[in-house]
Length: 320
View 1 (tube, rainbow, N blue to C red):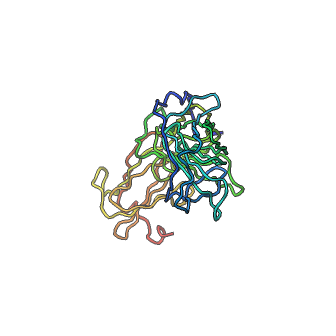
View 2 (cartoon, rainbow, N blue to C red; view 1 turned 90 degrees about the vertical axis):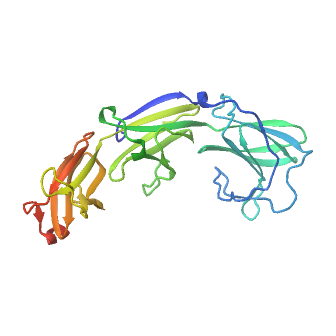
View 3 (cartoon, helix red, strand yellow; view 1 turned 180 degrees about the vertical axis):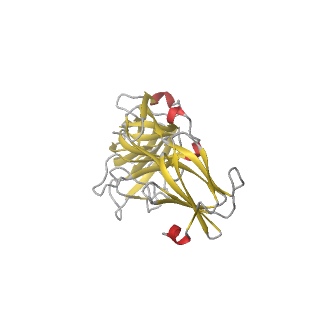
């Protein structure tokens, strides 16, 4: 069961691709890329010698990539990297790279490992280059994921207050999941290999969090919209109902179980909270005041805490 309501709409990702010219790339020494993570390849290194591993008279190899085995060639957004398969000091030497769509390399005859990355999707293939020109293709088995969230009743959430994190679909033995992409903006398309992913939607910065498992299908764009049951709450300490907020106030928010979940300082305490019951404690000039309140999903509200003797707490009690 997903936590929250998820609506999935599938459309062909191929409609998002546009025609672009074939790119040509000669092998080159490339620095500053030793932290690249390749599926099935542990590490790589740039060539040490002055001589390039590519020869102008070598065999021409044309590389293309598709989202599915029956899909058309991807025309832009591909990053190609070509490696020698024999490790040097534990790393694979990278001999050529190119950006764009279909790419043509001139390489000396031999065996190579080719990696194509398309966003966060990627594939690796071993190829053999001879004296004659040839063509190789890589099937990425990838699709796109577009995420958004709304409040109850379909009310839009301000994009600046909404973020997504994408994790591996399968949890490790300790229950943790590997983080793939943090801080994904709503309505941005993320390219991923086909599979199931665990998506965490965060509205605000306190406890309005929705978790969902979402499947990405190869060659398609998956659009997922989750529903948050939360509201924006602003709290202020006043001397009378409707009065001005008292400055230099320290705030501590407790959940229904009495656990502290947020602390802040200022005349106003504004935050997004998941629906439920809370207690807010305000401290000003060694006096402590508190108030219980309830957050209703989709109903933004302003909470006034009265700085009166009746609302005041014993400072030692508040410290507990």
